[in-house]
Amino acid sequence: MWYSLKRYFLYRLVTLENYFKTAKKQKEIARAYRPEKAFPEIIVTRHMLVWSVVVLSSLGLVIAGVLYSNKIVKGTIYLQKAFLSKKKAADRKQEHMTVAITQKDSLKADTVILQQIINKDTITDTDISISDIKDRVIRLPEKMEFLILANKADRMMFLLRKGNAGWSLFRKYFMAIGENEGIKIRAGDKKTPEGIYFIIGRKERSELNKMYGPLAFVLNYPNEEDKKRGRTGNGIWIHGTNPDSVPLQTRGCLELENANILEMGRYLNSGIGTPVMIINQDTVEDPLAIPDFDTIERKRKTIIAAYKRQRDFFVSLLNKWEDAWESMDIEKYARFYHEDNFFGQGLEWVEWKEKKARTFEAYSKIDITIDNIFLADISESTAVLKFVQGYKSDRLDVVNGKKLILAKNNDAWKIYQENTFPKEELLL
View 1 (spheres, rainbow, N blue to C red):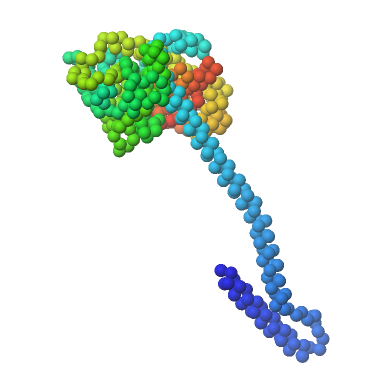
View 2: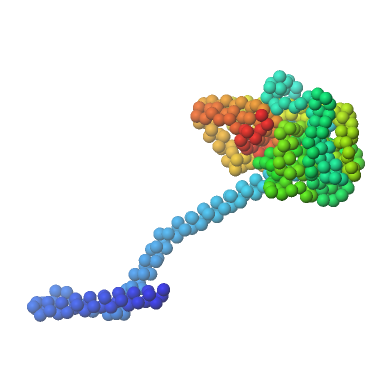
């Protein structure tokens, strides 16, 4: 490259030199016919030409640097800010996903804690319209229709179903269990618990890491018996597996092939209140002879009653949130949100609030409808609500699925995640 540039500049220098020599001779001829000298003679040498090229090139580089340096600096700063902003948003999203996954606890069989929550949040029974709730929530079966019997010894799961003729074996699946043998005692021991549990939550594909497959049912481990015996841990699910994989071993959960967990999901629907009996017997010749259906039915009624009370409490909270939204009063609306940790649709609280304030100013009226409410997960510190939301304003009329994740904040429940999803994912 340098050799080519050198030859180019030498060629240009020779051209200029020839030009000036020709001009000089033309001037000498002109002087022969003109006695008086009109202009002083200028002699241009190769040395002068070289320095002229150097000076002009340097001046051009300086001018270009001045013109573009500011743009380069601004571009660099913009890229740095964009990268940091994207990283911060990703970190915030991961933080909330981690909190949502790890903050699992059992559903209380009694309703003492629920009543304390209601009293602290100053929501009374008069705030809850029972008829309105029944029309807006996903229905739960009044009687026990399915029972899951899981035998750790032979890795078989039996789905029992009650029909007009009584209980029968409906489906049978191969499953994986915790990689370590024995009854689960503490968090992290990678053992599968044993006892009678109930499904208290359902998670869809969009909420799960791919290692859990397309669907997961949350169990109420540790139950009351586990707590009496000092057993700890949480996050025991029935879930699927990685795509194109087969169930091998887990960290304590019950794992099915993806096709089987999806099939089970179609039969159980929300799954709330479905009993899961986990045993460890060498052989199970007759799965129907093992469960005490009457005793399990009584325990299920307690679980369902507690779940409904908690669900009704959050439905009442949703009603107030809906009214605040329709009022288009940004301060009233903001009181339902966790201002320190909120993250929704890629926005943190300040950006979210500004966006909502601009929306309220732009529209003359907003109508919100909420239907098919489902309390998808509940613990002492977090709750996940899903529902079908209709949104109608001056310029927009849409219906979407909506998911709210709430957390306890100073004895009050606040929204700290809000996202939309295809309404088809909700159990309609």
